[in-house]
Length: 195
Image 1 (cartoon, helix red, strand yellow):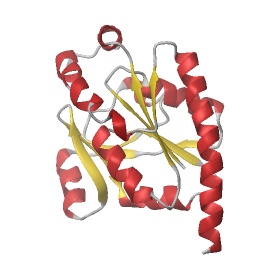
Image 2 (image 1 turned 90 degrees about the horizontal axis):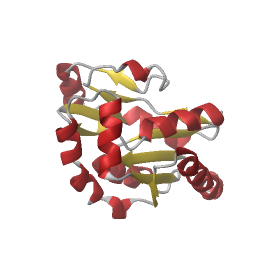
Image 3 (image 1 turned 90 degrees about the vertical axis):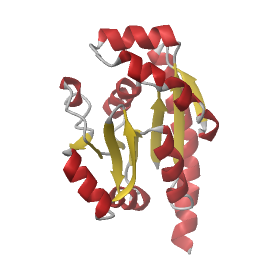
Image 4 (image 1 turned 120 degrees about the vertical axis):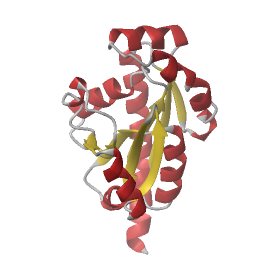
C-alpha cells in the first residue's frame, strides 16, 4: 500500500510522516528524486530524496526512468518507475511519501488494481501556514502561499481531507484511515494472487 500526503507548504506533511515512521515499523519512506538542495531537517526525515542536479534530472526524463515529475517552487520532483514496481510488489511494508497534487492523481491511477493507495490532503489556515514557514526559516513564503489555491483545487481527488492544527489529532485520523485501507489492500493482494 502507498500512503500519500499532500497539501500546501508548512501544513506538516513531513512532521506527520516522521511520526508515522517512528511509530509503525511496517511503514517505509518512499524515496523520490529532486533537484532541490538538501535541508538540515532531511536527515530527521529518513533521507526522503535522491538529490540530483537539474541536468541529471533532465537526463532521467529523457531516459524514461521517471514515472512522473513536477516542478514545484522552481525545483523538480519525480518518482522512479522502479519505485512503483517496489510498491506494487511489497507485501511486507506500506510506503509513505509527500507527493504533489499532480503526481497523486497519476500514481493512484498507475497502481490501481495492484495495491491500495490512500491519499490524504492536509489543510491548515493560511495564517498558520505563514507562521510555520517563518518559524522554519523559509525565504520563499509568498511563492509557497501563492500555490495554495492551485493545490486546493485538486482536493476532490483525495480519499480524505484532514486539518492539521492539532498534530496528535491529525495523526490519529491518519492511523484510522491506514487500518481501513490495510484491510482493503489485503483483500486486493489476495485476489491478485489467485489470478
